Image 1 (cartoon, rainbow, N blue to C red):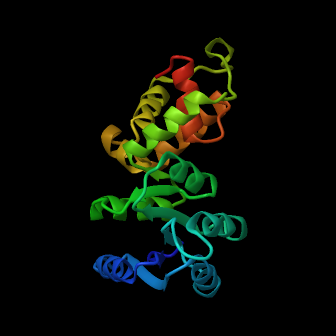
Image 2: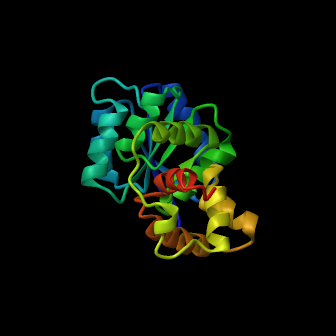
Length: 217
């Protein structure tokens, strides 16, 4: 990844795109390389511009944001999609993340959170606000989640791993965890990899649900 994060904005409202473009252009670390008003346009632009991150609205004419996200994830998994939309209906959240988005933000999010989400996505990390994380955890509680029982752990979680898992369950990003514990983001990533392996979880969201179910957090 280059030092400058290349971004495409996909939204059917031109005024919103222009405002977001202006906002992102304030920081030299971001470069908006294209704007799209529908799914077809964003798919074409991605091939042409090869961005690092796409900010994707879900409800656009033609190919909607969910379908466009799914197609991008299948063809260009290295390009990260952040959903940036007006809606936080449960099904919208789940469909966006299932399609391959690494972040889900509402359009009234603060600029600092938006910048943080883009930086996280560019590094291949997930970024979800606590309100969105709560929806996901609630949904996972309704379904059967594969995993292991506490007594079946081959190796128990260390104190630091448990501490990090609790912060993840509170919706914190890797950067926020690193700042809270005064450690590097790389160290946080290493701990998370160990946590996933020990819990037989495929991602941090499932790890939190397994941990809650077996009483680790």
